Image (tube, rainbow, N blue to C red; front, side, top):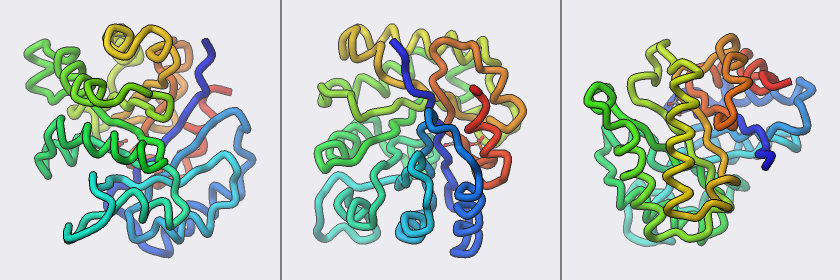
Length: 248
Ligand code: 13P
């Protein structure tokens, strides 16, 4: 089954009105391949700006996080409806920086993912192990645990993209090798086949994230279970376009 190549750009807590507009102007000026789905996630204050500036049909705008309630006394949180109100159509959930720094639990991430889907957003659900967990050889157990929290309460995975982002590879310049990524992605898909069914597991896109750049992206080209990338640092630079074009 052919899965559409997907490239996400997670700006994290970086940028200004000017720099976000500049990144989008750069994307607007490119002839992007029509077959690649691109989703960029600027910081929440710039979601409206990103929606207004984006002129590319194949580029959609994403939040980096949402809350699991529609509205109310939740100071500092952002609801999926507000994200949609700004014209964004995606959100990330479960990024490792939120799991480790903000201490979000698997269950909370799953709840937010479920609620965002119910509210009509598509979701990039991020999973991945820490260096300690990798050394302890429990990579797939950790990914399975993070996914199980979601699959327990979410039956329809049509609008979910999974991003496998090993914590040790994020922002370190030390990407997983294409072989390692493929092996883990294959394991993730096999696990999903058991929990959400073969058909959905075969259709769900699994992105690799962690120190992807304009050069190494091409090396993942022939890896059957790597359906795209979630890019941090390089999504702020012109080389993001090289990553978008890395499968051509
Ligand atoms: P880097 O590409 O900067 O390593 O970040 C990856 C990431 O966390 C994307 O969500």
